[in-house]
Length: 177
Image (cartoon, rainbow, N blue to C red; front, side, top):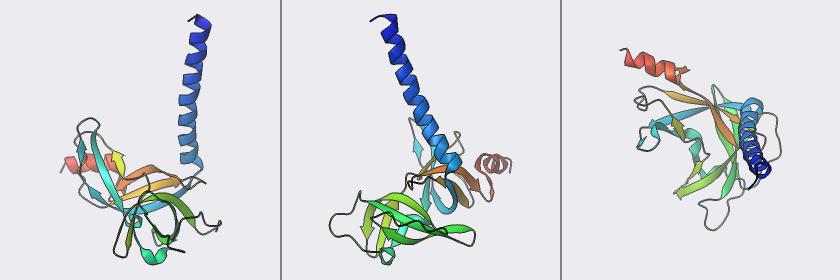
């Protein structure tokens, strides 16, 4: 392989990586911001370190939120959850297998059905893990998440707060007690 081919391959790989980064940054900067309530679980991954599993109130939805409940095997099914701001947080108000028409007072989040239990649907959004500095994966307090939701409904975590303070700062303060 000559130098020209090597440089072309290197340029293509670099462009691909920069494109992936730009896509995520665009989602963070231009997405609609929502504030979500959570309930943490404390795991540890030996290969990746400490992280917090975030269990959202909008992850366990009542089946009466379906506009039309689908039939058949549902785990893995892509769904759209319409959120409305109620008080401080956004809450689920509708569940659909089709992306709903745009409504100015609603934000639509894309997720996948994880399972169905009695009259409850468990939905995952890709926001369930938040990696943290080693030794800080066991928070004591109330966690909230600020997420950016892109136009296609895919969310990204912008900030995690512990008792209203940025996560790293709050964990630093907890360590000084």
